[in-house]
Length: 227
Image 1 (cartoon, rainbow, N blue to C red):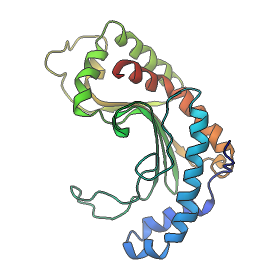
Image 2 (image 1 turned 60 degrees about the vertical axis):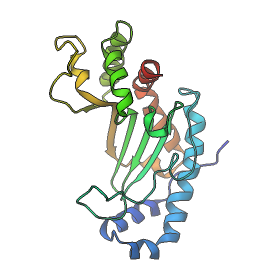
Image 3 (image 1 turned 120 degrees about the vertical axis):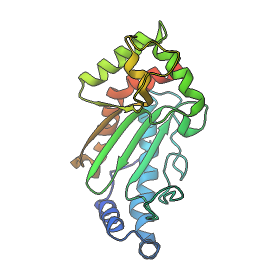
């Protein structure tokens, strides 16, 4: 069992400082802070929450490494007008499935210096899954199950995200009961709020797990519909 006891408050100070001084020089000066207050506790968090998540996602991948469950700090600036070299948030991903990690549904933890955001689902469908997703939306079995999952999660106060297109794709009925979901290029439930006090104690594990469990119908529908 993990002995994770919460994130240190220095983590928030690190990201607040990085937001104000987003340079390679500043990060180099604070590299030890990143390792001690961000990376190491995040690795422990991945292990601890991964153990809990197996209750609702038995084959979940919780791998405490950069470019696995931990997102890298460096930004990809090749196609962005914003050339800031670093992300100013902590991103952690728990996924379930045999495809590449970002092509599988899962659970996302996002923390910056002021807010916590949690999500369950698949942020953007890879091209090869967009067609199967749309077919599942209108499928006689998966279609009604999608509606049930969305209603269940929405009634608990979570926001559905992923709506992207303005027109129903060719070949699909624009008056279908689930037509709205044909406009999505990803599908996820989301929670966002100010940072809870639980972040700084072992209680953050139960706090996050509780939200993920409530949002899990979206994860489970995607697993069933897309494999």
